[in-house]
Length: 443
Ligand SMILES: *Cc1c(COP(=O)(O)O)cnc(C)c1O
Image (cartoon, rainbow, N blue to C red; front, side, top):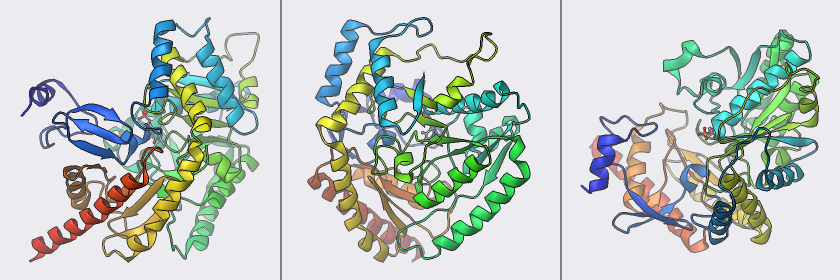
């Protein structure tokens, strides 16, 4: 065991980890492009972009430079009463990229805080308008929005938060309709779900502040896709009933679904949008909640009472803003959306083979995400297959970390064809090894 592992085991409390049974962590000492390097110099292909963050690849020269240039100019300044060019330029660029009048950028530190901000803005918006009966939120089954208390409340449908249910606030859960390649019943499933959702909205609309949704792709809940037309119908239904719509694009923003933002692909404008994971291309923890002008205007008043009294110490950290701005410029300079389209094409070529595999169900591709499940119906979150495969893939140089029984790839956009081939070969080889292990156990 290396010194680092021993010290880690003595002093560190890792996220999502049962320390009594967890295997030793892998000490990573370098990262470049699509690869991670461990202490012994082993190369590991980062097929999930380190929790979906490093969209342009690790340690990109242009991003490194943006970060170090900013560090030598100004590392940080408080953000109430002060502002600075990196934040202003980033906010302007984001507003230009986002549809319609999503023009007001509120900075925070991570996906969860961006969700808290959106929930609080939606709630206070109605209060400011004098409607103080609107205390409920609508959220989807299996949706995930982060680990802070507000985010847990709207994410209770994902099942991760059983220990905290008693301290979560009231949320009305509505059915999500997942789909995959060759899903023949999708029209009926969506129709049935919409009927249920309409009923819930009709009976409670005066009490609902907002609907929150992960548009097109539920991430942590199992990389479950939905159709743009379903998302559009839900969004329009909410708007027709005067319910605000929050798009949690923390995971899907910045190209994951094939378009820069999922709302663009759906063809609607939410009232609030949350962005984080890809925002700084994996460099710095930062998030934004962007509001429409209509929301912002409702917070204007001669008195202080209607202001949004919320902030974080590191709000709009200049280092994070500078690297985020450069990341957006890279989309143009490196024609990143073209690379994304190419990855989608390559993923698509794997679909038939996946659909023919006896261990793969619900094979699906959207943008840079390829996913399938090890069973037809969702099993428990911790399944033997997922654990087996995580270890097998890692031992074969691939960082592929299943979510329950959902196996997925979400590589950095800089991935080469050769690296993709290696990942696909490994993906199938791992499945075969798993099939063999089941047969051995059964024998
Ligand atoms: C990861 C994630 C979050 C939470 O982000 P953190 O940075 O981990 O707090 C919220 N919403 C979605 C959709 C996410 O994928």
